[in-house]
Structures are given as C-alpha cells and as structure tokens.
Length: 306
Image (tube, rainbow, N blue to C red; front, side, top):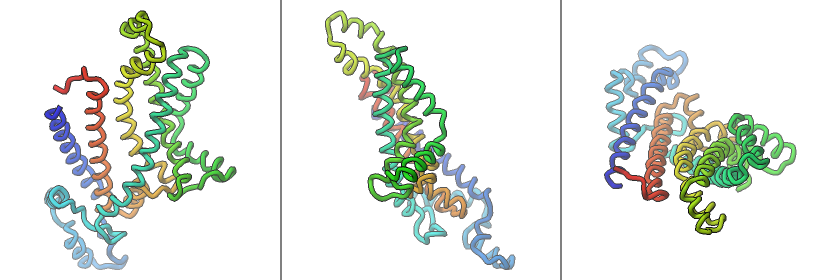
C-alpha cells in the first residue's frame, strides 16, 4: 500500500503542477493588472515602471519560473492587492468556512443517500422505491442556485426560521448545507440502491439466508458492506464536487468561504489571490482523492494496491 500511496502522491503533484501552469497563464490572458495600479491618466513611462516592478515585462516562461520557485520552495504567492497581506494567509483564513460547509453537506449527503438508497432497494419497485427515485431525479436535475434561492425565499424571508445569509450561528449553516447536499445525496441514493440490489441477490447473501442468518444482519452487516465499494468511489467524486460547487452556494448565501473570495479576486484581477485560491483548492482535492483510494482497502481487503 505504501508504494501505491507514493505513486498516487507523485501523480497528484503532477496534477497540481499542471493546474498551476494553467491558472498562471489564464489569469494573465484576462488582462493587464498594471492598468489597475496606475491612474487613468498615467503616462506610458509610468505604466512601464509598474510593469517592470511586477515583472510583467519579462517573458511568460521566465515569469512562471520565478512564480514556481517562490510557491514550491517558499509557499509565497505574493501579496494580495486588495488586502495588502500575503495571499496564502487570506486563502487559509477563508478555507475553514468552505470546509465547514462542504463537510456538513457531505455528511448530510451520505446519511440521506445511503439511508434512502437502502430503503429503496429493500422495497424495490414498490411505492417507497418509486417515490425516492422520483425525488432523486428531481434533486439531480434542479440547479443549486435555484434551490438556494427558494430556500431563502421560503424559510428565511417568509417563515423567518433561518438567516438569509452570512456566517454566524449554527442556524446560518443549515440552508446552505442542505442546498449543497441535495444533488450529491440524490446521486448517492441511486448508486446505493443499485449496489444494494446486486448485493442482496448475490450467491453469498442467498447462502446466508439458507443458513438462517437474520435478514437484518444480512442487510446491514453483509450486503451493505459490499455495496459500499461503488458508493465510496462516488462519494469521493461527490466530495470534490461539493468543494467546487460550494462556490455558487456561497454566493447565494453570502457565505465567506473560498468561493466568494475567488469570485472577488477574479473581478479585481488579483493575480496572487486567484493563484493561491486555485492552488489550495486543487491540493485539497488531490488529497481527498488519495484518501478515498486508500479507503477502498479498508472497506474490502480483497482489493489489491499493486
């Protein structure tokens, strides 16, 4: 397993490097940041001086080489133009809010998806199964931002049960977490149902029934364990999507996480802040994918890491 983990870490580092190159080039193609740092009536000489101080007059390859040296050797993304402090410090200050939102949404998605998926499989083609599948299809097809706006309109504006946005008490986390969890829970429900139906019809489960094993033990101790393998694979993908999808939800609910920070940085062409945000997010996603891959061996020891 150690060799496999090291190989996955190497692939993850390559992925992070590719992302850093892409973002570095993309943000510079979006416009000249030096124009935002000088007066509207600045002379060409003043503009050239600012570009020289920022290193923007050098070839793009040289700029990236210096950027990569600072980032990978010193963790220095530069200073945020808006906040006037190191960009990495700003990103790390917003990261806990995004992790809190995505973590709770992930827990809700697993709880609802696996639980309802098992119920749907145990009542295959009966009314509970049909209702749950219909709800899952609706949850997957409805955009997050629309769900969020409806939640704000109904539960925050009209009923006044929850705040309309911001990050404060625990109640401010309820609506954005549920909004973010709905599409993922629908996907997990469908894969859990399919995997449970296959597991309940397997020869090993039929043998346990012949041996007189209680149906309750068969469902929760044997069938569900086998069904969790594809569920874990999907859950790892969904967790990454939750972190990325939090951007839209954070904007709808004014949640002070990486999503709102990144949108603000893009609007202001804050190169350092954009690059730090994307780098931290991609590193976090690579780490999550590695953890999911290694978790397969815990769920099913038959899986080989060769």
